[in-house]
Length: 368
Length: 94
Image (cartoon, rainbow over all chains, first blue to last red; front, side, top):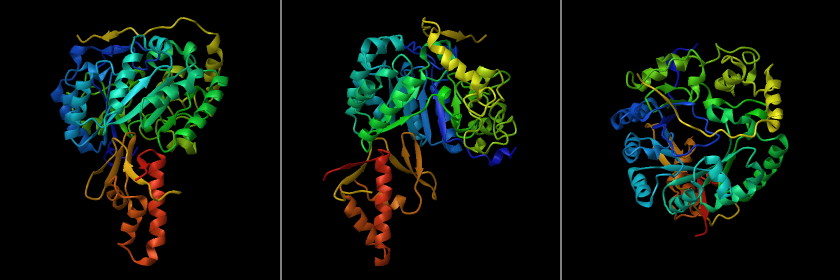
């Protein structure tokens, strides 16, 4: 293990400022057990965190949740982030947004807003979100489009139930006026794992969508940057999850726990330190959770001797934990994993699986 | 490569240049940051939503001896084209 002092600071700080959310997405990848409102960090604590983050070398602050707009002080948080010298991004459902509130967020210094799109069809979009939000999003998108300095990304969340309408979804997203579009396959963690059999796309669907994507990328080049990620279960190599454990990203949950990724709490034996007790530099360099999979000492074969270990860092620890019950194993999404077959079988068996969607209901983590 | 040098480049919404330290100048964009090495910062300083690509290249060339002009033209336009490709830089007609 290299000396902790030689490790550069993170570039991104993801702050889940609340777990409160008006949506009940069938593919929510947040943890099943959430932090309740009373446990949330107050404005002053977040402000201190942002200042320490900038000193540590963070460039981007991502305000997310839950729904960040559920916090009454969201404009103050944005201002605090900008004052600290950070680039401020907010990921929102637009529920809770209005013309004056958007103006206040922009005035506070918001650089970038990300809005997700669930489907091209209103009834279906509301079904996947578990809430009537589609029309409101389009209404808010028109206001965002008119903002001269605010960057705008539309995230299209795809899965088996909507992937065949990708072309229509891209056309709708285009009409919303963003500079960026991201096609994101559902990540099968948290709530989404419960619905995996209904949400995993088939291989045929995926092949058709790849063609649609390429055509759209060509058509939109120079106007809208379209990014797409291959879903894990059909990839040849795993994703470089969070850019490598404890390498680029730090996440703070609503209660102030510092984590290397937002699902990390599913890995047994990890203890998370809190920004209430430590500064960010200490958390990054000393907190045991950040050391757990940093570097390559923890790796098993085939990762340990693989030349790609500095490219994808063994893939996703949470996926190894979830599928193989071994957080140190090679991500089974990798075709070199001895358990890769297991993932393929899950993917192939999925379409024949259950037909009941499980909607996200809130299970709160109690603080005694 | 850029065909029409009369287009006017402009940074897209939410993209801004920031000095992270005296040595490190970066272009902050929604999905990350681009470290501006060499002439990168110099070229971007000339992107003001008014100058055409041709004017930006000429302004740069005027600061260097003639034997460097061809290289400057090539490098500046390929730099601008790569940012345009990522939708960080938008091109409009004057």
